Length: 112
Length: 117
Image (tube, rainbow over all chains, first blue to last red):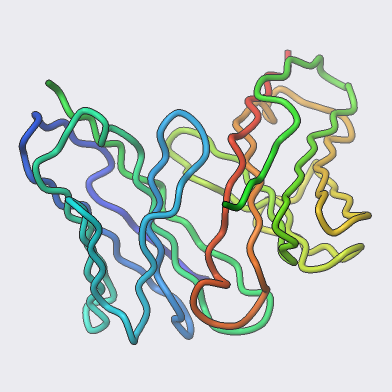
């Protein structure tokens, strides 16, 4: 059974801090790892990492896939209160009708 | 932009009622999913569908059924609602059941917060 573990489960930082969110996985026949941000409602897609694309960056957010350690990190620099959200990590295996397996999420609170 | 619309943001139902949660996507996606999200448990897959009239059980299908009569619409049905089905329900869609890259990305609706009293 595929498994995704995120850590820490929650953290509180102050504006301007840099945070690192962790995701480790166990999956048969790995295809990709996805990060989502969930504020009050719908999770929104941030990044997808694959064996051929192990690093992604968008503004203050960046993510790296470590295929050897079966893990990924999501970095947020110069945090803002608008970064407060639940951050979800998910993995997709290869194969037809493949589903995403999600971690439990990391709740990030950024204080002014 | 992909749009996934869930018919209700908040619902309050009584134990034993039959409940329908509706989801519509406008991007001609083949795959559609229903999850429930509970504190400390994350997103858990209830059912998914990879084609019209096709359905597959997810990790927690007990007490639920689904219907997909049209490609754009995926309904979750609680045959007899119970208090332990109080939860946030999220619908998602993706382009293809297989294939690589962007086809794996799931797009979510805003969620329906269901309370069963």
